[in-house]
Image (cartoon, rainbow, N blue to C red):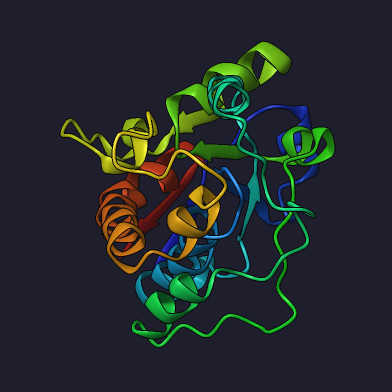
Length: 212
């Protein structure tokens, strides 16, 4: 098995021996993005062990303006503190069903300018997150994708529908979206299918190619 790296440019050349940084982004960093972080890392280990030390997969949270405005309109407050929390138990259980164990010390983190700058690829759960991040950091346009784009998914996604049609419009919202078994299982099932489809496209964008 041969690993070919096709990155170009001075910065990439200097970092050729450093792990590539892949960041998954959801809202609170408790369900979808940590699921992606651990599930995708496990995919690499199963499919291409030669890449385990070449890609560093992490995750972070970022609330898009559209959701902030909707929450303000409904007078819904996020949990305090919003970050620094453990992974949602529902997501921990979902990962455990794949024999993936999340370390007890793992905690949620916000997406910072430093993380954005150091990332080689950023994958957002929501289109509005990508839109807002491009407004904040225009230079990242070649390295940011939605999970829909990178997985080439063209169907309905429940996780993109946060108009609160079937979600509580009060301060019980956060517990619902993070722990309701039916809701969480649906969005994580979507994430799992999209991550499997996205796998080769992510490697391609990172300039990695596996040849037998």
